[in-house]
Image (cartoon, rainbow, N blue to C red; front, side, top):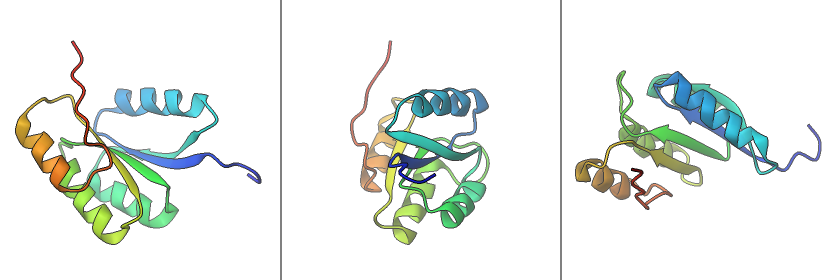
Length: 113
């Protein structure tokens, strides 16, 4: 669409309800548009290669195959300018440390009650 300055995002999370909820929230405003979503790392990487989004939101603990932290490493190696936000419901220090080491653009941990 001409004149559409919204940031294009891909969502990668193995929980469909999380993807649907994030997509609805992000598409409400005028800053972002979710151009595609998927539940695993392999198809997520292919979507990024095909669509070249501005950013990717990745679940740290994808269940099938490669996890979200390793996917982030692959994404940043192949697309160094891409913005990656890693989401996780886990407060395990291992995940936080691994995510920080992959140069994720989100290094702030937020714990919800």
